[in-house]
Image (cartoon, rainbow, N blue to C red; front, side):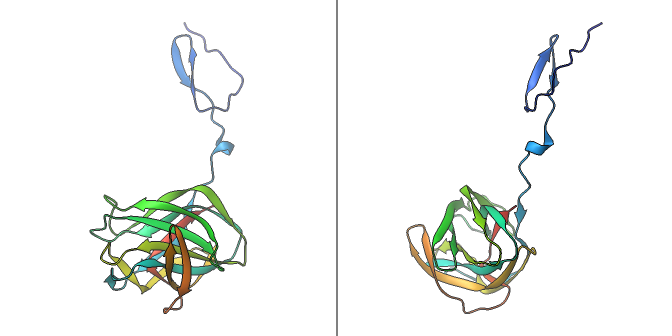
Length: 189
């Protein structure tokens, strides 16, 4: 009869050998990173287009302190390009960006890229999320596409802007309310 060796709790997700067998080491659930929540929970799509080179997305205000971990773009059937997704404060200062390759992504859903460094957002502050688009490139939805968000933010309007490398500078909206070009989203905790 083999006896089980009792070890002090190791909070490592590894397997340890005990008398020629492997048993999982205890796992500390407190060490798991919090789940990331998509900020946009539903969309009402509008007319597709691809006749603009620049940044498109939406502006919003935060209702609580949150940390953004990934940026997302709605995937439209036939999308295959790579898009720089950019996050700015209301003054247009870049806070972070990541590159999203839409090739092979599932149409009719958001696809996300991870930020190298998470972005901490302060409550009651304004921000803009953009996707860089190219005239004649992938299709995206016009600024009348409606979005429903979690209670963490209040969407203000669809935004468009100009590009300079990975940076986007907001120019204006044209569509007000809970709407977004493309649409775009982000993950947070």
